[in-house]
Image 1: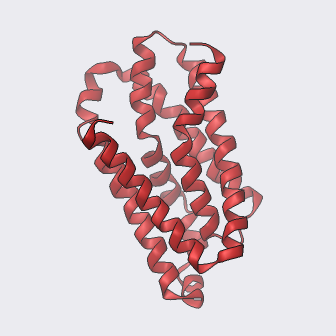
Image 2: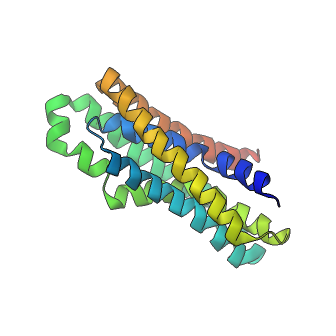
Length: 191
């Protein structure tokens, strides 16, 4: 595979991470640059790691993972989305008390969101192994592309969130649930 193919692959794989980053930025109105950097590092790191793991595992193990990976992604994103909506509906003062900022930017939450949005990259890694692609170059390009888009998405989400506040947080939660549902339906319907 050539450089341009890896860039296009990176952009397509990072769309879920971009949407989740925007949603996270919406929910954290006082998002700082270091927070956006943390988001980008989590999503970019996992988008680089997963194809590498897929490449290493090859086709033998992917059959077992593909049977339930979509359920894991859906469950994680739906739970986080439901929590965002619940926090928004509690009201502004209760949101501060619940630690929305801390919970959305916690290592645990970012870890689960990064895993959920990068599971498809595992299957891509298996495909890259089948075509004997250079996984080190591919993973690096995919990771950097996702990092950049996620960083920019979180920053954009902050601007959207401060403009719409509570409604934006509900929309962010709905987007996360929608992404999870999209992943689930794509796998169940064989799209």
